[in-house]
Length: 95
Image 1 (cartoon, rainbow, N blue to C red):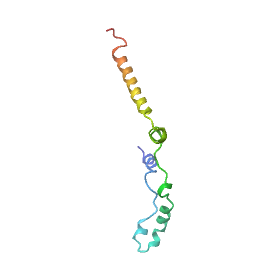
Image 2: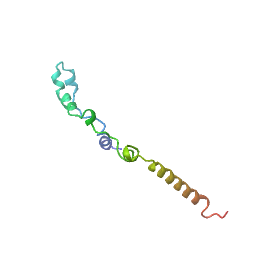
Image 3: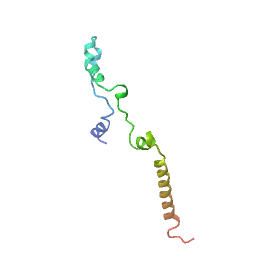
Image 4: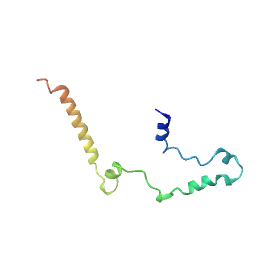
């Protein structure tokens, strides 16, 4: 893989570089002002958004909680397994 591709994929995981080593090694607290400003803008408490979404939020949480996706997965896997077994053993072989 190319370094730029890896850097682009990991871009969301690595926080922005706000504090530099020279700011941290200086004795005054004024050097950390950009860092404090960055973190003060982040949402706090209940105003912070939750990352849970998709199938879990739609089918397993809240008032629409159901086991239908799990049942669909089980039936789908059974159907795929039966089809593969049929193709291997029963299609062209008389018993």
